[in-house]
Length: 443
Ligand code: LLP
Image 1 (cartoon, helix red, strand yellow):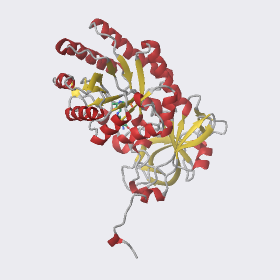
Image 2 (cartoon, rainbow, N blue to C red):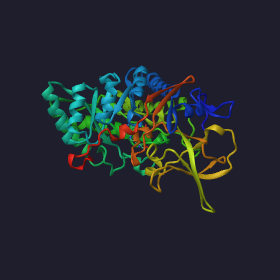
Image 3 (cartoon, rainbow, N blue to C red):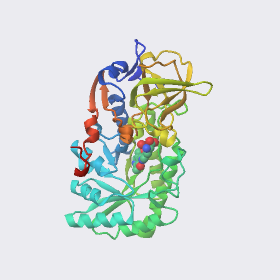
Image 4 (spheres, rainbow, N blue to C red):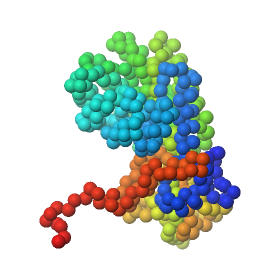
């Protein structure tokens, strides 16, 4: 377990997050339940913000990549911590705006922004759109003209950096659906094109090389490629970008196969990026760009845990022992999608020695509905509270109603106090949009 001040085992032998006893949380709010540690989220946001300010002055901004966990409360926290956000859909934009998030600090991403999403972004006057196709550039230009505005954009470029992570979350290899490749000349061509647009102000470039990456050298290499490209563009097109957005992707601890980094240690990623930007700018005689980073997972990932209640236990002699929980792939599809590994803990008996090798199974009608395979646990019994650690990122945000299971609510804990930030779904929510044609109605 990756313990810290706000994640530990208390004197009752129970898991405690943000000062709240997880067994009590399970009793009060029910399970399955996502629980988020506000202090950790704020600490991570501050580490990134303060390190960037210390190393690079006022000439930069941290954006929280809100696809990792999106709801109104997280946007309030990001706003209070004085950082920006990245959104990737009309839905995330709407949620942020409803939370009162300042539009000028919103960046919009996506490899296929829909016409209405572009319209919504322009109407809201968001700070910047990260364009990722020719047709999108055309659409932004036309819509900006209609509104009599000039929209700031970045272009998403692909530096062709191989990052060590799961294939499905790599984004900057040469066959990626994201970005324009530096190597094959498409990044240069699209730059020349964007510069012809009257209602677009091209400010610079964005790159994101992937997610759950620990190697600093991958990020540093991406900086080198982007700055090298910038120098070439300046020489060839006479355009010198003023902004560089380096994306996110810093890895987090899920199991002891991963590095355990304290929030303060994440500062080293920012330091390494800034050092490389400065070095490259000096060598290539470029002005220092306004620098952005977009961490998502590392801000919320380790801040969150999911609480479940143990139900059926099934032993297949000599083969496997399954511990079934009241959640599963509908609240955490990451094992089903990426065979992601997690660390489960019995929250009500967190001090007990692990004695068994078990697999944690969800309740969906899918053999692949698993949360963890062959993990150590004390002997679990029906009714035990099982906590799965590091579920704050890409769990709630990727949850679904498969089998018409209810997406669990989210609770925010701080100094022992807990309150809903996403309330429980109800069966009524499930049928809210269902319609029965007249001819099918039962009289
Ligand atoms: N910026 C851009 C443009 C991105 O595409 C992403 C993540 C981020 C920032 C934030 O990356 P982070 O710091 O969270 O690694 N569903 C997958 C992860 C997909 C990541 C997509 N892009 C998972 O559950 O592992």
